[in-house]
Image (cartoon, rainbow, N blue to C red; front, side, top):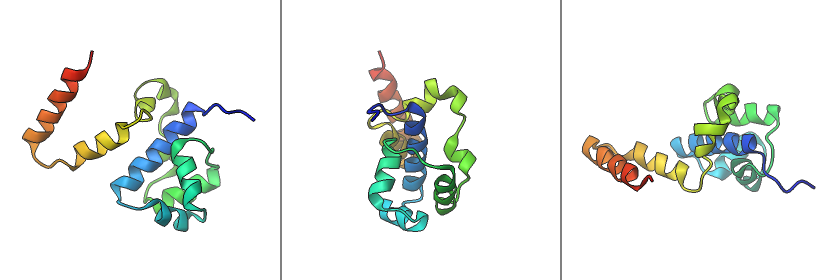
Length: 117
């Protein structure tokens, strides 16, 4: 058994999670719509289990998206695509998106940039 998680599966799972959170859908709701358990959704989102093409299309339908959008441009997966797989990255992006005040968004961006080394 291969214990390594494929970065492509992680990137796809990250997109699934980001879209689900954007729509404020729970893992249980997504699971019910896709015909799997919420535990399976957890595994897909972490990239532990690979999503089949048929299941990806079911998930995309529930998420009002397309399979292509959830797949992303995998050729560039070594850069920004995999950055979203870093712990906390999706949550940070979601929080940034939720901030309505432009000054607060700018402040958060400034803080993030100041932490970069």
